[in-house]
Image 1 (tube, helix red, strand yellow):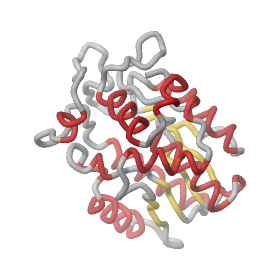
Image 2 (image 1 turned 90 degrees about the vertical axis):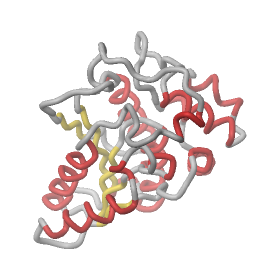
Image 3 (image 1 turned 135 degrees about the vertical axis):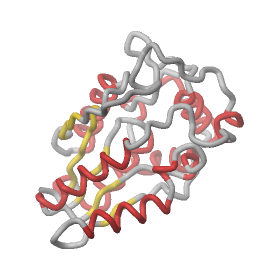
Length: 227
């Protein structure tokens, strides 16, 4: 196996992680993991992840199915998700975000540690960033440090590092990094509730993505990514 695993959802953050890993290590040393955990947007995420992997020059992502015995707004189409919220409303959520899915990142990273150990990879790229701290406890630096420690304690072999290159960056800064790395934004997908396979333009993910491109001075790119 390659030296690095990248958790690749097909969105902006994971795409930047992928291209950063490829820039740092070379395409032959990078493997992508895409998870199907029952999310409504899985088909679009998988298509985006496969297109990004091909463009980055790596093999198609390994697709892993995780079956949780519970659901939530991102897995049940009948459950309402917040729509038309402002960036300020999203960033000032009191407690976990309405779209937080308990255990998701914990299970995905645990799976990645096992695969890395068996395959000899020494790093796992994870696209958590500063904007996620408030509403998503499993994207915070203390969680990442804890899961890295636990993962290595549970395994017998070389130490595996969780690489979170975006952890202290805003969404606009991430877009700027992606521009420098040559990330093809038109291939990425960021939406919690796609309509006929297209971004809804109204969910928190669409709102944050749109705002990130505008703040990064990439407003002209809006037509390339559908929202």
